[in-house]
Amino acid sequence: MTARTGAGPLRRLIVLRHAKSAWPEGAADHDRPLGPRGRRDAPEVGRALAASDLLPDLALCSTAVRARQTWELASAQWGTPPPVRLDPDLYGADVPQLLAAVHATPPRVLTLLLVGHNPGLEELVLTLAGDSLDDALDQVRVKFPTSAIAVLTWHGTSWRSLEPGTALLTSLMVPRGRLR
Image (cartoon, rainbow, N blue to C red; front, side, top):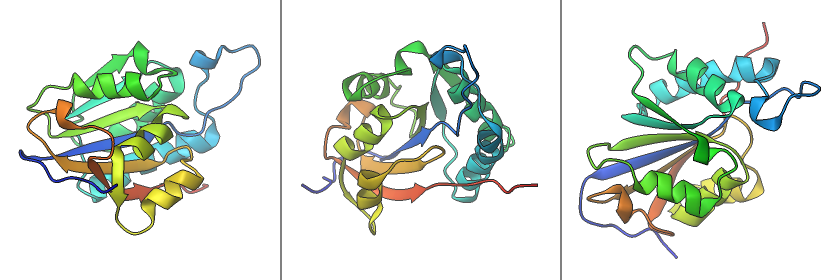
């Protein structure tokens, strides 16, 4: 299956898996914060998105602490962060739930950032990408690690036009921060 070219403007879905989390004893999964590596990597995610001219018009973010902290640290690297919608349905979401959130995005948004969790995000990328540049799709099949950024593009008049196999995976990045 290959990505189809449709009518309408170029749209980009940026799929971001939260940065590396900590596992504090007694903390509920939803409440787990970023660990030291995650706190280093998340700002690097923001810098990588800015350097690649991939700043979103809107962000949808899981309400889990580690996803919110990833968003906050990444978006702090930009002059003016876009609006963010914290969505409790993105925590633990599967592909149909993630796609429903994406489909509800207003048509005026051309670049959408989705911040969430595996396995849902990895499965979403594999479901939506009909093809990829280079070996990006093969890399996602092997692993979609923490702080991974997948960029899916397609032409469509609305976000509802994004369906399985209709997007091209144009980029896969895994920014890592430096130890100080």
